[in-house]
Length: 430
Image (tube, rainbow, N blue to C red; front, top):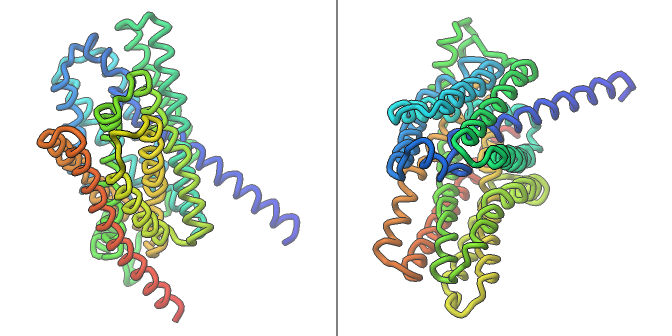
């Protein structure tokens, strides 16, 4: 390689990682407003006049719009350039945040969350995943998605604590809450503007399978149909589905430690931060490294992790929790959570292993998101009903056994995915 070629390669690598850094900034800020409850649940009740049911209804509205909207995203994600989709959605979320800072009436609050779902989940998220997939080589897929998850955790933490600091500095008042919301809004708008000038355009393919020139609408529609008909995408989607079913169960580790181990209130906050942010930051790079360097296949890594998760949770179920220390319980649950976070960080990476054509990457990610995140519509209700029907340790064991069941289901689906990938590799080698 001569000096000029080396300079070109170095410049490309720098541009690529700079673009990735901007994508991480967006991914770490765009959901702060839709997750306002995480930092400001009590202030929202005090100063926005919302009760538990109203906040819950807003989150349910968000979830329903997300589920329906992702169906349309299968078409939209490849219809427009990612430069416009990413910057438009980020700025749109920021503008909705400015509206929320006015403390609108409840109907307006619900409408705002519906629009946040459209911008964040329908327009932004599948296109972000598409952009991340396209920015890395085939051998870097696990690491790039792992770094995305870790980067999100870091940005998420910094932005959230900055908003809390603003709220605290303004006397934890209504004006402080407004300032915190406006801070979230300003950050996401600035990242949206930067994204417009840094994220590259897509090359939208305007020819059909016969090589005939067609319009962008027809090309996007044809891409959507091709993605829907590609069964390998659905196998990846249901692999994600299985991981997410287990992931939803992690929510119940906090009440488990509180009810069974009598975890003090002072430890609840520390455990929650480690569980939500710490594991995300560690699990992302670890999962990516193991997938790329050890198993050399994200699908194989996920399959192996399902086995480890099922065995680990089975052991946890049969341990004598009543006689164990709180720190042992915390270590066990955090260890299990770390396994799931390594899977969650890379579960979209197999889209590259199944050779999804680049021009339908957006549609593929939309299908993966639609099916993969669907457990959020029923898993929490399922697990919660188990705890209500069987209070105490017996209820938690039912939840944990269900998580083992989903892990076993995931093992079989991911095993089939590995076979599908091997078959495609054999076909390509002919």
